[in-house]
Length: 158
Length: 158
Image (cartoon, rainbow over all chains, first blue to last red):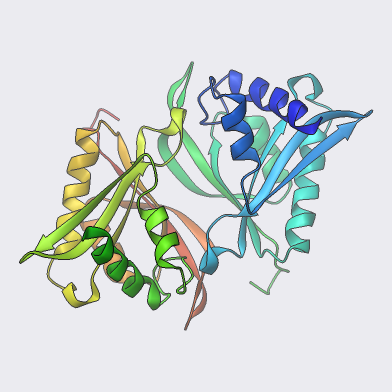
């Protein structure tokens, strides 16, 4: 069942406490409520009939800011390095464009999560903001957080 | 009753559609649910026994980001220019410090809202991010939005 697989991935990803702000002890119920909020599209990525990743896509703000999407991604630790994140990222941009969003914004990319930042830059995201010490890293103390932004408009049309 | 006064202010503030992302047609119920969310402190400012402003204060992120507060402010249009916003802003910083927050962050300050930006800068906030075209202004089209941040740590302790 998808929810079971999603919870397993969610739990494994937040357990290390170094990429998401969620309490590593977040319960299954809280996690699934968050991941399946209303007005949120929830996706899973499969490989060999196994769910290896999941992402959510939604408007980042209500009405007058609803043309900018927000998204969050999680890859099963056992499936890292196989391109699942990249595949989901590209799929997300395509879905966001299909829904008519003008841009995708990440509100909270931990600055020490270099592989994610590398991937998002590769997919056209730019760092548009830096939140000083906004994340309490389990090993590194307070570290900066980036706001990243990817326009979906054609060049010159922005 | 406070909720009635808060709704009147909320409704008047969002009606112009030039400072908050809320749909100007947001209902009383939706507004009050938002303004009185769990884990949110809700305040009112009074002048001559009239409620002339209201603000909310809460953690901007869960657990590992919960040391940064978020706040939102609304002043009754009839009470503008009387220092209510500034009074609430100072009160908010004091409350945030009292609760142990390390910083206060505004996620969505519309760049054309110059009086608000002026006030927040005066209270020590800095623009730490710019979201390109993230607000659909009724008269000006897509305009930028700022992320503003105010540390509450002593200088040199950050």
